[in-house]
Length: 339
Image 1 (tube, one colour):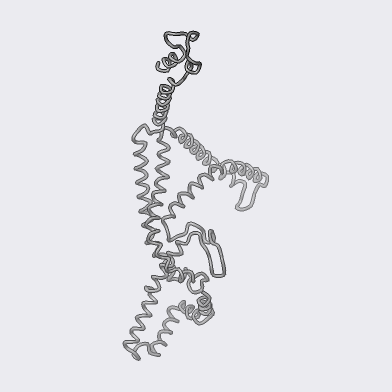
Image 2 (image 1 turned 120 degrees about the horizontal axis):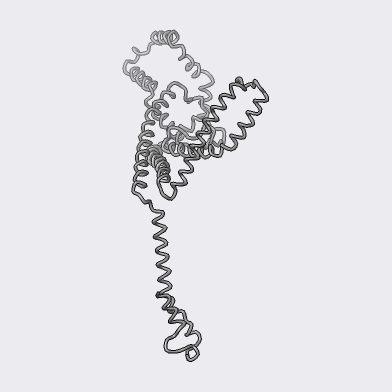
């Protein structure tokens, strides 16, 4: 009504006609009276549109937000407890591997990086603390976000279609697996084909099938790697990458890694074992006993009996004597001089 009145005042002036008026042309058809009501109408329409769109996007029910938050909290707590509980067994396993010789030390060409990286172990405490927090929150956000997308009215129909497709793929995959097992036993015998023609047809059909279905498998693999990568952010005892993945060789004894935190962890173990290793403690006790008892401790007769006992009951310890007298110890000294 306001807009119509504004048009009426502009185009039908009162108490005079257009032919009798003395007003100029621009004043008769002026639209200044339309500016304020038109702006108000447009503002109201825009506000109503924004409110309507927000009502469509905003979750309609409270459980759409509460349930994902609860799941996020539970998953984050479980992941954090799981990562924190892994460190102690991993530390014990690493120490046992080091003491038993599974982890090489003196004959390892890269052992020098542990000796020259002792100052970097200070990164471990903060990396463990913040890594566990961020890893647990990221995994919890992924799981809670998927639940939220399934409950949210905007994306619920899309997630239902995706879940339906996944269920269909799982059912078809189970049927395919049963078919493959039955055909494989009748066509193949180990690595050899009993029926070459049937084996070729079987391989062609399987290849075409896998070429189409691997689209979904690639997405599943990406999701798995994302979750595993987020989990390994909180772990510094193991590297998520392989031994040679992300490793760049800059020289004979210089290596650059994209993920060095497992090296820092092993450096901390080496530094601790250098002071608390049973051999170090035993050797220190022997030195102290020698200083205290002088000639009455470690006599030639006792050394002879010790060699007989070691040779008879623990022959595997002789390899360390040979290593100390042979090339291994010389190579280690040469590497130390080069570093």
